[in-house]
Image 1 (tube, helix red, strand yellow):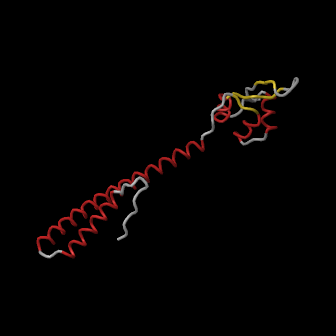
Image 2 (cartoon, helix red, strand yellow):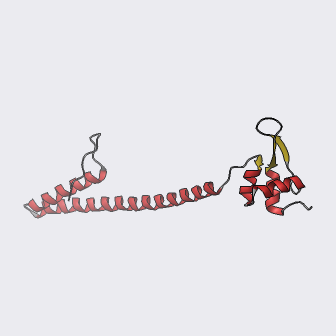
Image 3 (spheres, rainbow, N blue to C red):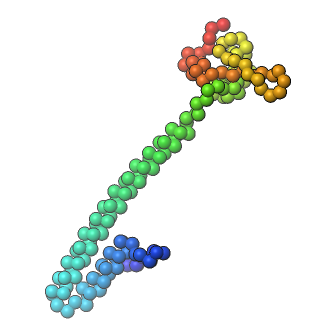
Length: 148
């Protein structure tokens, strides 16, 4: 077995420590002169085996928790990705994008009173642009346009 290298801070990991101790017990078992010494080393090896089984069970549990965590992170990422930031007011361009319509169509709806919209100053001079509230955008999505 290959021994794990020491960490930069000089400490060995628990796994490398158990592996090192196990290797030492195996070497002592092979050199044992009598049955009592062999029994002692076999008992130690059995204890190492139990410790390694416990570590593996912990690793399996950690792996399962990590998989669940990754799944939850992916779900949250998908929710956030599909979630549009809620704005108070939308421009014609933004509303057209959200509704899948042309900007011209949305401007016409505003001009004809098919949606409740307001004008706001934009740019320089007297130019104005249509803006639509979030509540109105939700109403359009849920109930459609106002009648002619």
